[in-house]
Image 1: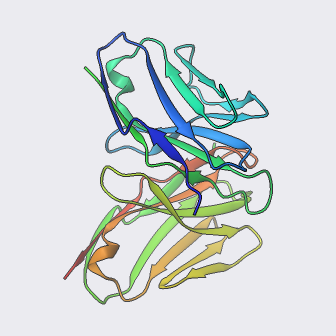
Image 2: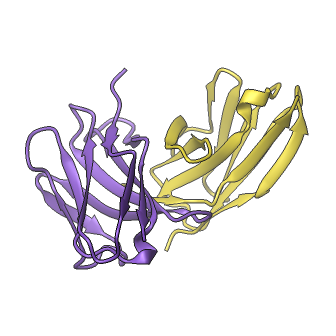
Length: 114
Length: 112
């Protein structure tokens, strides 16, 4: 069964460093998302991406964040200068353009900023 | 702004009992509602999706109901097993049909 994959599973970085989180959405999906979950808190929406551009972003998604679909399969989230409060689990999700509009989530990348 | 609340936050039940997990949302103009399972430190596994036109959806021992007008959904898990121990998350589209707004989850422990 097709699934969303994410790499790495765990990333440790120093404050101020840049990180890139990678996702491979399900191949026939057209909408892509990033969410994050700080330990003990709700899953929060960051950004959605469709037709090679951001379709919606939350107030969390400031200038430190960017997304890119560099090729036909990968979808990346870049954090330019990480802060301690960026430590969280980051989830990628994707869905098709019609039907039930069900979002399918990847296993997540745990980001630890020291 | 769509707000999602899940009650109870945590519950423990003996194996074999039925589980009833509640989700409420403030904006009833939703397109669908998804229930997810999350194991500790892991990703989100989609369990059920209910379209706004549906009243309930079933998958094996799981049954989810939706009362859109009152802003409520209930997930029933029949004959619970220790393997059902996890956190169950409810999510609805916050605006239009794009971003999902999540509840904090129902943390379930099934005692053998």
